[in-house]
Length: 228
Image (cartoon, rainbow, N blue to C red; front, top):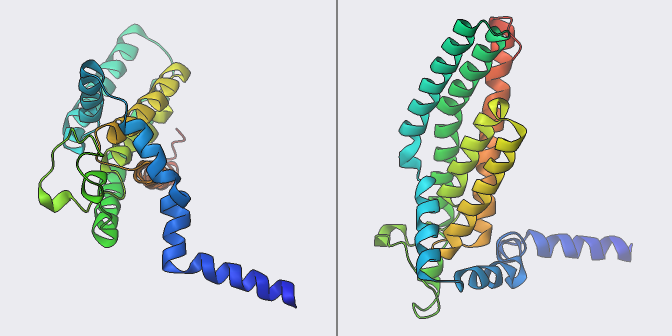
């Protein structure tokens, strides 16, 4: 009986709001510790590179990436047809699926991220700590000072990676994962996100896009009798 009471006590402590944040977000201090380790690395070329990597994952770039995907899908299909290569039906199906997943996964993950930013309203590193302790390289207006969780950039890069996964080679998949890690790192280097924000962004982007893919590919299989 005493063991059960002990377990209930542990559960109650973990489930409390403060404890839940400490366990899942603060990581008992590790969240801030990791941030300061990464944010403490700086140099002119390094800082510039971090900004470029971060800019690559701006959600405002979605329309450009989508247009590039459409052009590549059309061009590669035409090349396959002209050269008489096989598997053209499967090729079209995969790329059609990718484009549909982007159209569904992007707004789904984006709205989820926006809702959580408003709901939790966690302070960004530069807002939470003294300015002399945090190197803040990406300036935001005051309205974004409490939009740390989750990272929109991390969400967006994961949307792209999961959406394009079916049409990527093994080498490109590895490159995509490295790019995602680099984007997450850059958000901490620029002083605008904690590690927990980045991890949450990865999870949201990957989950929402994966669910979109399951839904869309399942619908294609049922309605069009096509298995990509």
